[in-house]
Length: 551
Image: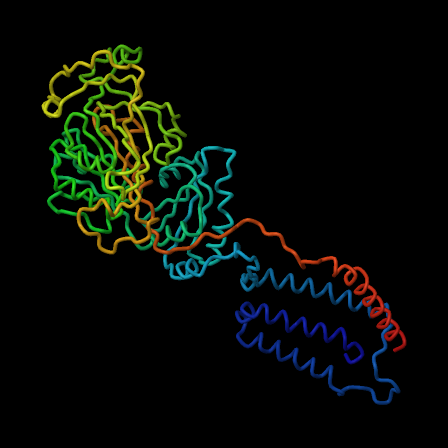
């Protein structure tokens, strides 16, 4: 052993190194086994460096190595080291999960806010990616790196992968509200994030998923459709079933209960048979002022009673009832079917709005949704009369082949829906006119719309926002059944409006690549690396070779 101290020393160091790497695996054999290996290695090293065992009779006790044998020992030792380290890594890979992010903008690591949230997760969170409708767009691939960081940080994050749109059973289970989004599932709760996925959006989505139950409120008390099944034909029961399948909780809110809870986020109102009064307008204004998202449906055969609210929102319900234009070819075909009230046709789904984009992608922008009458909506301006609220209005869908009937409020309220429809269209109307019947409003400075004082008013103008969607028609009626657009219009609108509350603020980071420069003057280092360093290395190698040869 003393004759080959170099080889035995390297082998002993390897033994100790591998033992430390595989400590967790070796203790499964016996908890004292790795300790014994380390002690054995230490004893061998101590013996090799001690004078014990040396032959004093020899004139020179130093080891004599021919250069070629010395080189062979070094090469074989390096090969052995690589093999042993590689084997140790494979067998003990859990100990090699530590990584270091050396980028200046830390694009390969999560912020402390995200890490803190992920470390507290106690339930699994499954993430499913719904691909884009455009097969050439690798939407899911663009999010893999970010999802990998989340999975490395918490074992509770499970990336299920890309949803196969041909797997009908899985699509029915997930029930996504559109393309290009992530669906998060934990227990009986579910959430969606669409568009570009950022760390802030994903972390806040996880917080809202595990801490809150999403509730959709339906206003009642003024002749609105019921959320429970009935035989009247005016029930939201099918819509409620779809919402519950998407993990939303549905609650009715009677106008006699006053303002909605401040934590309420989405409210569906309208399609009322009885006129809304000032009390209801105040409830809706307070809800918007508190940052809520409101969906308003208009019963075209009854006055709604929200003129003041629409004025605040820079909208106007035209005094018109839209009916079918029977002079067009499609109108003549529908008349032959002997409907008591022939439907109007909604189309022109806006592909740039997240609400109607999914219909435009699946059925085409010119897809048709038959409606039992409609009431056109006029967009007046982008700023309300007080000048404190900024409103951005977007047209969602329109009606075509429609014949307008200008009608007074008192006449509208007296229309007998059980009798044959006898009202006549206006004379000389424009048969080619497109009527706006769906509008989305993004509201900035929403707290200024509240009638009552807003407690904990949002001081950040960027967060003092609300959203209102107005549909100038009812989604119920004889034409809504078996029409996929009518069945999914409200659930998809709710999914868009139910944006996760931003509970953690994570500033965006600059992910643009940066150029790395070793020095402002790299030419100064050229003589050192190209001349001085190689010469010194060569001289050192020759000196060592001569010393070993003369040994």
